[in-house]
Amino acid sequence: MITNKYIMVPLALCWLGVSIVTAEEQRPNVLMLCIDDMNDWCGFLGGHPQAKTPHMDRLAAEGVNFTNAHCTAPGCSPSRNALLLGVEPHKSGLYPFYKLKDVDREVTDRYTNLPRLFKENGYTTCGVTKVFHNPDNTYQEEETWDEYASYGDLKIKGAEGKGFLADEKDRKKRYMKVCPGVNPLSDFVDYRTASHAVRFLEKSHEQPFFLAAGFIRPHVEFITPEANYDRFPAKISPPPILESDFDDVPLVGQSMARQSVVESFEQNDCWDEVRRGYLSCISFTDDNIGRVMTALEKSSYLSNTIVVLWSDHGFHLGEKRSYTKFSLWEESTRVPFIIWDPRGQNGNGQTCSEPVGLINVYRTLCEMTGITPPEYVDGQSLVPWLENPTKPMDQPAMTTWGRGNYTLRTKDWRYTRYFDGTEELYNHTKDPQEWTNLASNPEYAEMKRDLAKKWLPKTEAPRVLSGKALDNVWDADKPLQKFKTK
Image (cartoon, rainbow, N blue to C red; front, side):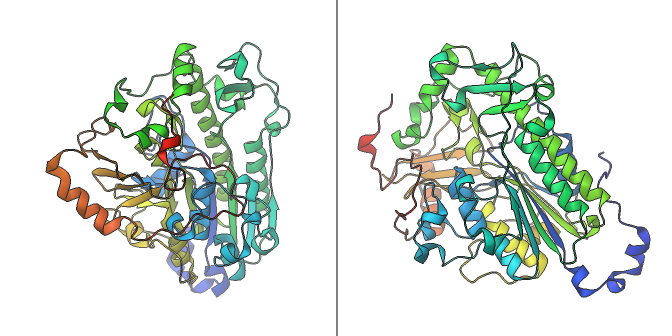
C-alpha cells in the first residue's frame, strides 16, 4: 500500500468545513502536468517491467488513474490543439501540425483555449515550456498567460563512453540519439521547467491559479542526466514483437510505421540503447514531477489544488514493427492520464478502465472549477467517473490521424477505418498486442457497422491550410498512391 505523501490536510479544517474560508478561496487551483511522447512505460500503467516512476505512481495511487485513456491525435500539435481548444480535428480541420499564430484568424477566433478561459474567469495563469506545441508558445500569449516562460537544454555535454548515435551517417536525425549528460541538473530543460513551477508554488497568490508545466522528455532526443541513465542496465527487456505483424495490416496502416528506422536499429543492434534512453527520460521527468508535487505539498495550496497529468500521445519502441508515434495502434494512442482532487472524490485511489479520451479534459476541468465552457467544446465531463471509476462508459475513445483515418477504442476492442475504407479490428481481451486483425472475419461485420455508424464522424471539416507545418500522414488529402512500403 502506498502511503499518502502529498495530502496533509489539517483534520481541524475537515471538521470545521468550508464555512471558514471565503468564496474566492473555495475556487480550486489547477496544476496541469503535461508530458511529451510518454507511453505506458511507467509503474502505474505496467507497460514495462524496468520502468522507474515512483512519484507518478504515488500520484496515480492518490487520484483516479485512467488506465484506458487515449489521445485525440498521435502527434504533438494536433493532440494539444484538440485538448486545449476543446475541439476534435474533424470539426476544426486542424489535422496535422500547425503554427497557430499563422493560422487564419477566422479559424482560431472560433475557439477559446483552456488556460485563456481560466484567465477570463479570474484565475492567475502560468505556463511553463511545452503546453501548446512548441512553435505555438507565443500563440495568444498575452491573452492566455499572466506569466509564461519556455526553457531548453543548455549545451549538454555527453558522458564519455555512454549513449550513442544509431548510425554515424545520421547524426542529424534526432530520433536516433541517446545522450546522458554530465552537466549540472540546472542545465536540463525539464529541471528548469520544474524549478519555475516550484517558484510559482512558493509565491503567495491572491487569486486561484491555473499552472501548466510542460515536460519535454521522453520526446527525442533522449537527453538525460547521467544519473538517470545509470539507473537502468545495458540490457533492456524488449516488448513483445511479431516479425510478421504487417501481414494483415492495410497499406495505410503500414505507412504510419517508421519501418526503415526499425530496420536500422535491428541492423545496428541499437534497441537496448534506445529503450534505455527512453526509460531514462521517463525517469528524469518523474524526478521533476516529484519536485513540483513536493513544492505543492509544502505550500498552502495542497488541499485546494486539482492535479491533472497527461501525455499528448504514446510512443512505439518496436511494437507493431514501429518506432515513435504517428499511428492508430495502442502504443501510440494510449497515454498516462491521472486526475487527483484532494477536496475529496469518491474515486480517489482507484483505477478507471473505461475508455476515455483527452478531448474530455476541457469540460472536466470546467465542471470541477465551476466555469461554463464555450458551447462548441467537444467531449464530456469525467466528473461522474471521478466519483465512480467503475461507471460504464457508453462511447469509445476516438483518435484521429489525418482526414479520414480514425480509430475507436472501446473497453475491449479497437476498430480502425482508414480513408480508403480499409480496416483493422482487434480484440484486446485476447490480443492486447494487436497482432490478429479480425476486420475481414464476417463474424464481426455487424460490430464494425455498429461502431462506424454510431461513432465515426458523419462529416469532416476540410483541412486548414494556413499555418500548416509538418504534414506526414497519408490520408484523404494525401492519397495512398504516393506511398511506398520501403
